[in-house]
Length: 232
Image (cartoon, rainbow, N blue to C red; front, top):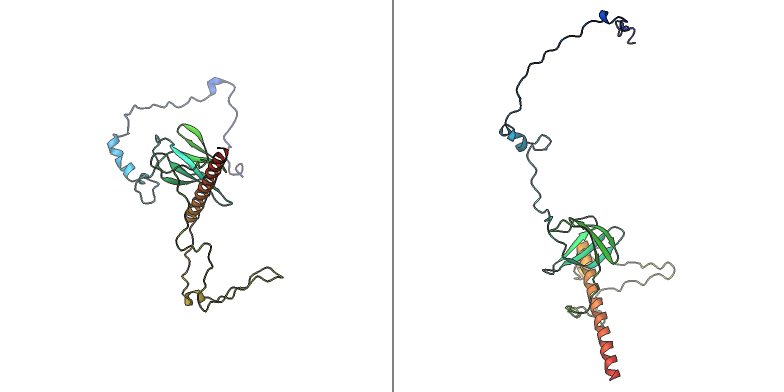
């Protein structure tokens, strides 16, 4: 198609005699000064960025962690589920507990949680990687678990008058048949239970773990005291 249009029709081999070669045109360039102005002439470029949606500078992240902040925490709890991997650490200076998900940066620092296992966590920061082992509760500094008021542990649970007991599971299918109808709980005066958030679930698990460790430590201390008394 290009040949039909005549493209390349004037292109031929280079003459064998160099004297027959046409001279190249002479190009003369004139020296000119720099056309870039002073830096003050381009301040508007920073004030109105080209690729900004609103042509305004993006605000700086005020919550960014201090890169020089050391990792002064203890690993107190580890939560690993199918959809969540989370570690709970306790600051050694103020005792505050903080949660950090796998892949996130610990609040107030530049340390990122890069690896999490049932009894260890690995953080990566300005000083490289640092491994934290799960702290084992030694029974010091904790409070003994106490029964919550109104928990009703050890006593029968009274049912409101007029309420029917739930049906027992079917022997053939093993499934319970529900007899409650919508609004029946409100009619009986039973308060509705608010949904539990993931953070509240994590906090409840952490409290149960701490209470269980304190109970085991108290039992071990009691057994040791009884053994020492028997040996006297």
